[in-house]
Image 1 (cartoon, rainbow, N blue to C red):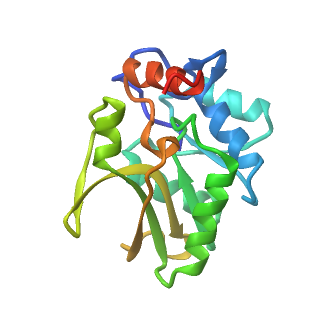
Image 2 (image 1 turned 45 degrees about the horizontal axis):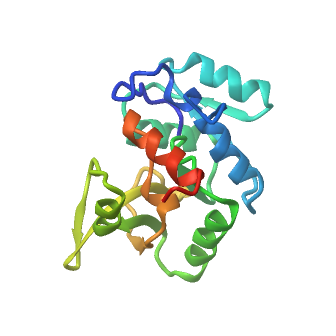
Amino acid sequence: MAGGKGSRLRMGEKPLVKLFGRPLIDYVVSALLDSSADRIFVAVTENVPMTGGWARERELEVVDTSGKGFVADMVEAVEKAGVIQPILIIMADLPLITPDLIDEIMEIYEERPEPALSTHTPLNLHGRLGRRPDSLFNYRGQLIVPSGINILDGANIRVEQEDYHLIVERIELAVNVNVVEDLKLCESIMQGDL
């Protein structure tokens, strides 16, 4: 998912914001390419014309969506892509993600009976990183933060799906880039300062 305005970051199209000279989306696409994912679709909106161009230049499959919001765009993207199998949905602003972690999430999904899986990190991890998450849930008495990676059944994308809450204490899932401080935190982590 790479179609958001990135208005809080205020650095242009968020997927193309540079981290050590590379666009944020490039980190995610590289991790997906090195994972066991079969195909990569980049969902864009009219808010990110240069992101769409970046993806097309790399011969990635680009799906244009209406820009009506994350969920509506996700549903539209899955339907336009024609995916009726389980599909991993990942945000373009997770530059710390690794191929191994993507594969681990997909393997856990395969072992679960639920049709969907959502990934979360514990709130205390964010506190230790000195960041305040945008959203948070109380799940069975534990405060958790959604991480921006989900697996859904593409055949039933318009239906609310029971999901397994995968809660993992991994920095790679805790830091998505929404504000300049998140970008600086990624830099510190990648340099080994944290």
